[in-house]
Length: 119
Image (cartoon, helix red, strand yellow):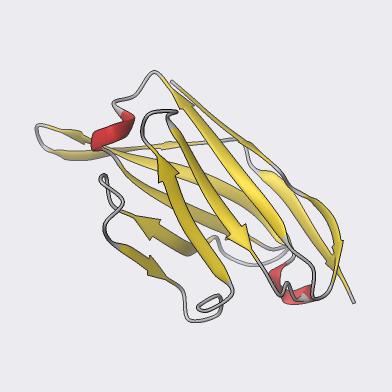
């Protein structure tokens, strides 16, 4: 199983970045996918969720209207478009897959990608 994030970097406040999460070794098209982030000294927080077919999405209040989660099941890839970035968005961003199993679901994680927003 591999979840590989990419697209992070350094950007000025007000700028944009697009994160990608490429999945392999999991049934991507039937997995709910999430983006999390963890800032230094803080707990990991859920940023956005997209259901397996992509019809339903959900966002943390702090990113609503600025971030957009999407997925391409044909490419086994999930995205996070981040606009109007703020310094408080600085964090390591992780993608997570909730893979259905008989007893519920099993979570897999990527290694993370750093996003730094300068003021």
